[in-house]
Image 1 (cartoon, rainbow over the protein chains, first blue to last red):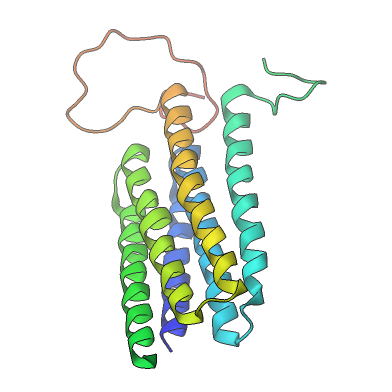
Image 2: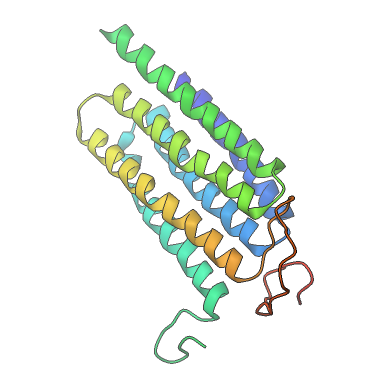
Length: 92
Length: 121
């Protein structure tokens, strides 16, 4: 029961973060809100596994945690230097 | 014993959910990127840590608990790094913080940005 309530409140928080993603005046607001959405999705996947009685969903949540971190840094690096710093294009 | 485990995990998940709701309301209502970073830090550290602690107490000592603790440790160390990087890049691209702290500073030449910063292209 408490897992269901926690999952519903995760969904409510996710809607609020989506509102900030749509409204955000600068791109950094959007990056920040997408980072928060990633964290909420990690919690939601874990809670969904507990609600459905199959806690093996935690593996997928661990993968999402790593992807969220790397994705945030990739977007910030594109904003900061204009490229991802590979051999062909290189930082400006 | 069963009742104790249920009570402890329910209390922990309740604190985590409260932190999530407070952080999300702050993410909507605060006026600036540098203020909203505080709210996101609340979601990332307090909310995630307490909910993962509650799920770990509920599950007992199994392999799932160890994976949950891995997620918790990873989020606890990487989320402050991500928010710090957001703040650093936003400051570098010329986002001005709101408030009364804007003492007359010499106008610096800011790099032109395409990130929606006010007054730029």
